[in-house]
Length: 169
Image (cartoon, one colour):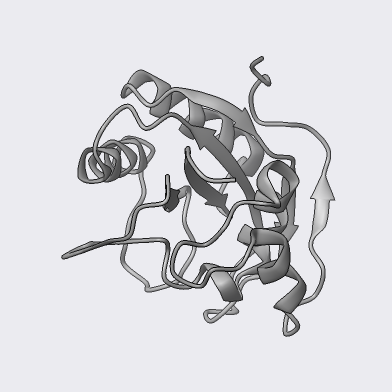
């Protein structure tokens, strides 16, 4: 299985589930059609521990624009929602990462696809596996399910009820 663009979304400030829904709506306004959204998972923070728990989900989108344009759209949504980058790995109203862009490998300043730390992040792999367990990492050659099976150093995530937007056919 390959194809599609996969975005990871996370929030740990304010009305977290509402922030995820607002971000998805913002992406659509920026010309990024959201096809499917995973369930919402709650996870403890990593790296910078003195902050609230995160809600995370994954969205499948169409490759309607080049990766750089997709990144600019995501950053515009983050900025419109008040994202401030004053503490590395710190609290954030919204975070939008491009996880995979079809089967492409992109390495340019400010953008690395596939996301460089995806293989070690249960909070990304768990919701991604819900939608695309058979998706193959174009560099590692392993499926999302295989990558998820290899993550050992994190507690299991807890699914949150509710989906941030409607599912589309």
